[in-house]
Length: 131
Image (cartoon, rainbow, N blue to C red):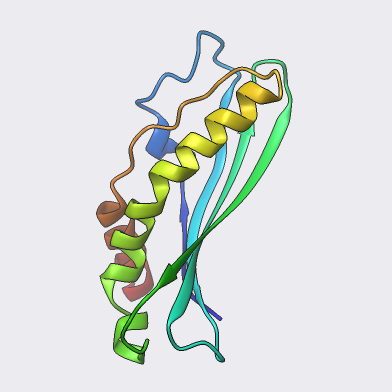
C-alpha cells in the first residue's frame, strides 16, 4: 500500500550539468513509500528514474530500499516525515552509486545524480495536496 508518492519535476536537477551533451539527463524522478498489511516492522522506499544518455539510450530504473523498524509500524509512523524525508535521504546515496555503476558497466555515459533536498520535495507535495 503506497501512501504518498512524490513526482519531482526534472527541474530539480536543472542546476546540475550532467554532461557536455545537453541531450542527456534525467527525464523522470519519483519516490514513494510502501507498507505491507502483513508485516508490521518492514517498509520500502521505491525510487523510479528515467535517464536518457547522450547516445539516446533510454534507461529506466526502479530501486527498492527495504527498511526494518524495531517498533511496530503504526498509522502515525506511516504518515510521519521520517518515512518520506529521512528514509529516502538514507537510501538515495545507494541509488546514486547503483545508477552510476549500471551506466558505466553498460558502456553508457555516466550520469552522477546530484544531491536532493527531500524535505523541500515533501513540503511541496504536502502543500499541493492541501490546495
